Image 1 (cartoon, rainbow over the protein chains, first blue to last red):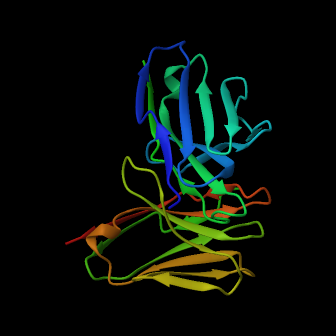
Image 2: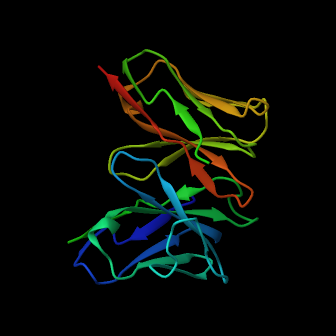
Length: 118
Length: 109
């Protein structure tokens, strides 16, 4: 159980365009999802906490107008990178934490999405 | 604030043991341990919720010293499959995880 999927697995886009990444919890309801970014050989850096039905909480230094997060249902959160630039190229990973009926403590990670902006 | 992991990297021969340490300057609610292979997402290993708790699975175990705000991950009789980067994650008040800088473990045959 506790499977999290991400789509797409990788995406290459041109500078200035927008890219949407989906994160789904497949077999449990996730009241909270987290979005991380990881640059090569570095740790995962939390970008934002996404709560179902409310606005996301962004970490310091993360532009909320550039990284739009929508958590429309208990199984789906989306991250849209707007007006992408080459420096946004990174590995984006989501994780999900269940509600009281599901996994309560562990965070389950999606497989990640590799974004390359040319 | 990011927890500090040590060592940054370790190289072992198959069958040898290793210890990875994680320390935080802030009070810890819990400590999570993950292993990440290159190009893949982190895989959950275990979580320690209480000070003094020790936990293990197969030949990987961990301890949590709440007073010292530290946790250690013990890998016994390492296998080739243990290679990867190990991250500890400390949980904040909003249940968000802050990951350490990682420890790159390489197990050689």
